[in-house]
Amino acid sequence: MKKQLRVVVAAVCAFAMVGAFALTGCSSNNSSSTEQKSDSTQTEQSADNNKEQVELQVFAANSLSKAMEEVEAAYIADGHTNVSFADTQYKASGELNEMLGAGSYADLLISASKGSMDTAAEKGYVDSSTRVDMFKNDLVMVSKEGTDLKDVTLQDIADGKYTFCVGDESVPAGNYACQSLSTVGVYLPPASDEGKTGKDVSGKGGTFADGYAPVLDTSVGNVCKHAQSGDVDVAFVYTSDVYRFGGVQIVGTVPADTHKNIVYPGAITSNCKNAEATQEFLDWCLSSDKAQEIWQKWGFELA
Image 1 (cartoon, rainbow, N blue to C red):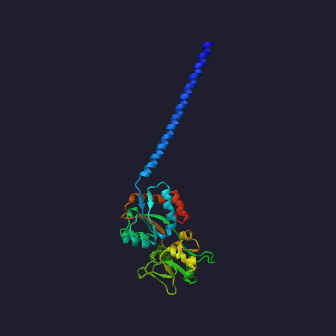
Image 2: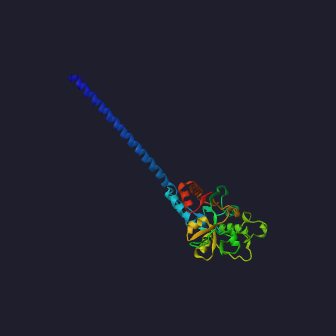
Image 3: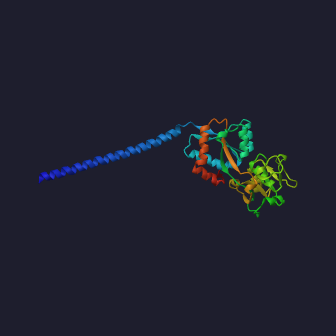
């Protein structure tokens, strides 16, 4: 009996030792797995930290200013700690081209019209192989916030009911506005476009018909401010400008078939010194959920 009891006790002890070794092994494996994951994370972080520090210079259409500021900050926060941004230049697209032509440096150009980007490509300011349509926008008529105006049409402008403001020839929003106003006889295209109206004209080089004296300004932001202050009854701006500036309300939408499609192309410049980092940023702008959230917040739709 005592012998049988010793056998049972020995068996129990043996099982207990096996269980202890098993638990020790699991604990060791879990610890090893955790350490491996930790090592992997540290390696990735170390790789990011060891990337060459790059400062990118962006030239962007004036209407992108608020959105781009947020996007650049979000890009860095999204793990691209090796990237910083120089003082991003927000100007009318024509003025940005002039700056590049005068020797100003940029890594990335984003224009507010295909025509402006076409000019940049023709003059060799950008690498055409990197060109991509980034955003779409709408042209609207706005007035000072709180106004009683509503349902304003192009024909109302033609009938002389309201004073109005548009961008000058360097401003794509002004070109689009002139294209639309040509359909109701307010804007007269140059002789080279005789007999054409709407999206078939450039919105440049023409004149306003007798009896029309719109306020012209050098950026779509300034155009919007004329409506904000009440200097004019109506201003032609992008939908995004309503989000960007506030103080105005949409009183009419310009029919999309009266002007060229409003598209913002982006391209890496031909003398870019940081082509790989610039391409990564450009790709992120178009693929990141966070970036898309910011663009939409400010009234832009991905093209």
